[in-house]
Image 1: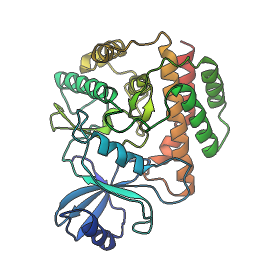
Image 2: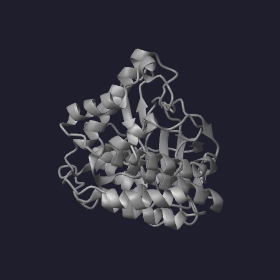
Image 3: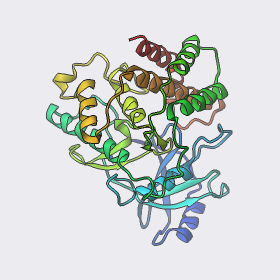
Image 4: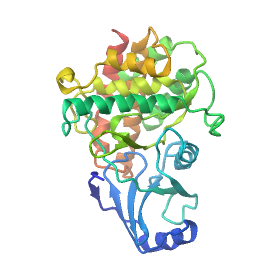
Length: 343
């Protein structure tokens, strides 16, 4: 895997003893190291005598209610493993906080490549085009999952997705608010006023669908796994599509690099109209007239998430040094959301 790692201590000896009793074939000793990604749920590589594994855990400390639900991640991985949506093999869920200090699960290790920058500087234009096509095909596959057959019919509340998510993330934002941000207040108000009526669309949504949450073969020609399912639920498919299209507008920044100002045609990256048309072709779903609302909602939701990361950084239990940078993005994201509503 191309991800760089920083050391973060786990009780390796005790963890190895526990996993030997709960995962068939697991053999210690093990050495753990934390991946640099995973803003919300810290993620570790476990190098054991029996091979490599990946561990995802709740962060330590006081957390917002319903956040960091690694048990939900484990459930959706179980539902999707072996389906048309590639995921790692979930191996064990531990709900006993005493083992490492918080709930965690272990899954198989996939030796894949992660592209952290959506401009894909490592690739050639024709490779970038292939990778973005795979991105849209994978999103369409997620939205095509039969949630009843997958055992996920109760994975989220049906209907009124945007209205419910506006309420939920407004509460989450209030719970993690550290200072008054007028742009965020205006965005919350305007989104509630402009929220569309429910159209009955209900699919499995990933909730954080972006390029660095997929793992590819070294050349980017095949998707090996979709990762980071913490925010997945049942909801409206266009929420994932809007979140993905945010990257076209985000500025070049170290916390979450976007594509704003770049010559995407020269890079071989489709523009938004092409992405929307291709998604519609793959899924048979139409793009709503008020597409700016979907984009503005995506900026609002990401701003609320970033505020939560900032609050955890102040509390000392954020999982990455990038947490403080994410916190500084809240005002920028809120302003960009307002701009979309005014288009």
